[in-house]
Image (cartoon, rainbow, N blue to C red; front, side):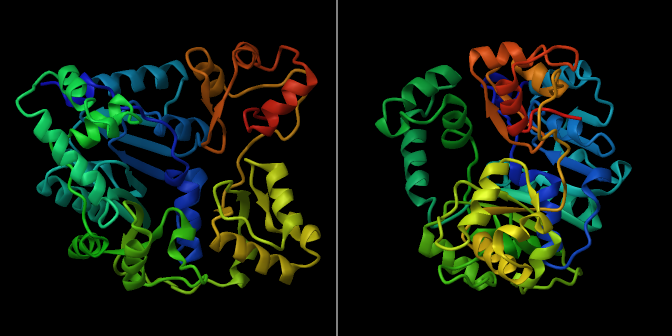
Length: 410
C-alpha cells in the first residue's frame, strides 16, 4: 500500500535545529552531559529521503544514524544516495515508528520533524513512548508540532479546503481544487497537500503537549531556537511563561526539546556560561546596539562558528564578551555550538569540496555545507564544484568563496 508521501513527495532538506550539535549545545546550557556529537547515535522519525539525515552521516562519520519513514519511494531514493556516497553509518528503513524497539538500542538524539501534529492520537502516543524507551539517560529528543493560538487562522483555512475538496480522491485534482483559494498561492504543492489537506493535522496548546510528554516521563528542556525562550525583557521563561509567550507572539509552530523527567536541569542561564561555547551568526536575529565588533567578526566568519577565546580581542576582555554574547543569544543573533565543524577556512590551489556537495551539485543548485546549512549555487559554481576533488585547480576568488560557505574539507 502506497503512502501519500509516495504520491506527492515531500521535500526533505537539512534543518540546522535538528543537528546533534544544536541539541547538545542546548542540553549543555541547561546542565546536562550529552554524548559528544562526533560519536553519537541519532534516530530520525519521518526521515523522508534522508535529505536531513544523510548530510549528518556524511560529516559525522564516527556517529551512527537511523531513519524511519512510511514512504517507500523516499526511503529507496535515500538509500541510493547513501550507497553512492559510500556511507556505512546510516540505516534508512521503510517502517512504521511503532516497529522501533529494544533491538534498536538507545539513541543519544531523537528527532521527529513534521510528525506529531500529523498523525492520529495513538501514533502521537507511540512517538513519545519511543522517545522515552529509546532515549539514552542524557539523551535529547526534538519534536516539532503546530500550536494554538497562532495556528487558528491556518486551521480555519484547512477546514475550508477540506470542505472544498471533499469527495476528491485523486491528489492532483485535490490540489487543483484547493488552488481556488487565493490564500494557497504561496504554498508549494507538497506543503499544501501534506499540511493543509492532510488526513490529520491536529495543533495543540503548548501546555497540552507538555502534559502528554509528562505522562511518558519526559520533561521540557527548551526550544531548538534558544532566543524563543526569552521574553522581550531578556528573561528566561518557565513553562507557564512559555505558554504566555505563545499567546503574546501568536506562535503557530514549536520545535521543542525533551529529556528524561529524572534528569536534573539548571534552569538559569547567565553570561558566565558563555565561555564554554562556540558561536555563529544567526542573520535572522534582532539587531542590537553595542558589541558591533563581535557581531562583525561573527558575520565575517559565517556560517562557521567561532570559539569564545577567539572573540575576546573584539570585545576588549572576557567579561565584556560574556555580556555581549549573552545579549546576542537572547536576541537571536547568535547560535550556540559545542562542535567545531571540520571545514577549510581558506582555499588551496587545488581545493577539495565535500563529496556530498559535489554529488548534490550534479542535480541541484542547493548543496549542504559542513554546518548543515543549504548553500545556493549559480550554474557556473555548480559546474566548478563538481570537479573539486583535490586534483583540479580553481580560481582563487571562487575557491575562497567555497571555503567561506563551508563547502571545502581538509
